[in-house]
Length: 607
Image (cartoon, rainbow, N blue to C red; front, top):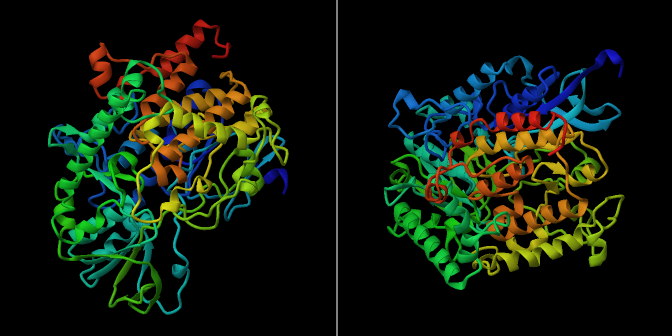
């Protein structure tokens, strides 16, 4: 390596999706003269909404007004303000125009994949695939999301005797024209994630015969809410109210009269349970699980309140013909796994076969989106180890395993931050144990999990992938040593991604710039352990895999705004504060509010 190969920047951002664009714009607002480089492996902005990943009928699971940045409304579909849909094309165009408006496009290096990221004297050194150029950045923001690296089962890795196209759901957009060919009549779809539902719907809409393969030992079909409950109330809008933040027990929301009434009171918890049972019933009727046909096989395999626990994930129906299409006789659902594909025949592990298949679509999850970090860096950053398999399948990790970041210790070492093994600052074992008990104490509704029809061992706490990120962004181990060179964005799954992306980006960038005063290591470790214990108990299998926070974005924003000294309760009166949905526009101007506050503080005081 020579100095001629090295390109230096102030900050490198990996990813040009919602979080990447928001963080780039925010960094430039705070440091207008900074040399900011955005790196993305795709050819356009958008991440999951990039141009190559779009296809007809791809629609977001939210209504218009809930899926945009706070300071820029999204134009309605076809200019019709009465159309509540948010299509994939709308989202991509919106993000492209946002990047163009804020002069970000010239800063993005498209079709560029980071193969290695490691610390160096300047900050971070990035190695790029098929390039001699090396990037060195003082600061690094990782905004890769969790849907960037597709996972394909082993049998798809170059079977010599398979003569059908095998694609991942990520590539549906690029393969759409080929699948449209009338010669493609029979399609196999594999998986039970929301992408599988979308793929099945798309294939049936195109008149294909579909065999849907869902493995028997997984978490099973996901819960799906109707777009409007009883045809009256938009599901995501209601999920965006403060009332919902109390009906959905959150570890970030354990104060106040509504918390005491609904979560600390047995009668209140009964009311909460009846609410979710009613919502579950309505969702099941809307889907038609009881109609006596194959759709009954898509009923979530959990004994109560599936739309609350979201064990397999949660979807929202946005297209009026979604369930009628899935009730089509052209759909066959089998609970099995593919053993091999020979020529045009798909052989299942049960011994059954699907003959004469023309196409196979794998909705089999995602691989290691942090593969640019080696194991040592992952441990330092606080990222879970990757097992070499999809995120839907992971082994039990014993407390003594290095990848668990846990070990036994005394309560005294916990209070002091606890010197961990292998040079780590925090001994996570004691924190995890204490957090597990505290979540049960503060949120008794979560203390007794539901019964599962399949694979109850999925709820084994030792299976959880733990992110050791304070406020879901800051590596505790690095921060404890005064290293503010890196932040991880987007490792939180909520119903309002763009808004959370803006809020998290501001907080994370202020941290990188030294304008956020962090609490003690003990307080940070406690917050992280509580989050991990809560999301595992609250969202079961989803919480085992991701920092899941589906119904709980408002308490998260509350915590970030409290750190920044900003007002997060922004409605005009108490009734509206509880019952009126929070939309991104309610937070319009929050960065200006922070900048004004910082200016009044002399522009340098930490908040």
